[in-house]
Image 1 (cartoon, one colour):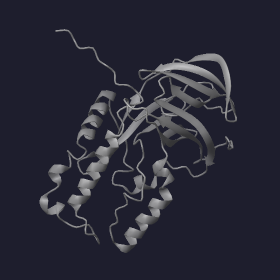
Image 2 (cartoon, rainbow, N blue to C red):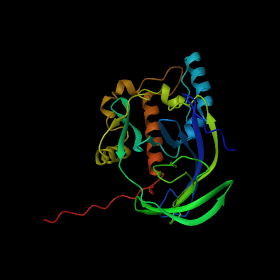
Image 3 (tube, rainbow, N blue to C red):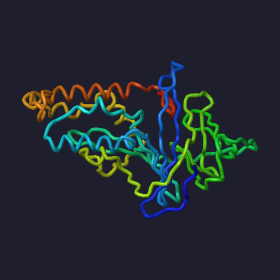
Image 4 (spheres, rainbow, N blue to C red):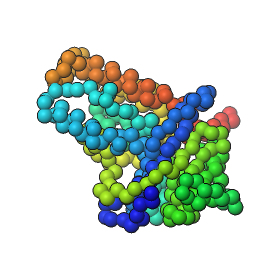
Length: 287
């Protein structure tokens, strides 16, 4: 059902997009994840919905741990998101900012870059009904892939999932011609008390820190180094006496917890080698 388009001071129109994608470039296996696009007066925010969907569960478990003073490994009761990044589009100029979190020493930080991409859409005469929406087809090239999009003027937002925007209505469906990534709008609702941060971000050290914006090259090199060794900047600070200490009310040591988290992060980043935007092959300078 289409919710109200009206905005309150802290309200958003939340659009749910089911993302179907191939995480491995040499495999036909596909995965699905629910993502959301929250549109407010000032901007939109696209992200994996996994953390937000678990807010109430995580809050109950964390508060129970705090009350009992006992550590509990929550990794088995929580689902990890498929993607850790967010995409923010600031209105009315559509400043697109790509953001991802990483560890800087003992302090988590948010790193981001501004993407100046302007989409060159070719709007065709082809029309089709997708779900309850009357849509029209448009095509564009982006990130080394060719994309087919279907938008509807019934939803007066020149926005869409991920970085996509600029059509005369909300994007209902968009997919690349290789079948690697496909988003389709599955529903929407009005969120009266919209919050940009999930509960786990609010309680995590650095979770509410201000984003640091750098060049895209600096962003990509920093993230690449982090993915290779997520604990590289922390490891020198983890002294043997600290690693052997037990967590409150638990038989798990800090060292064991660090090892578990390190494996979790490496598994997370190694699960996908087929990015939405293909790496740009730079020409080598002639000697």
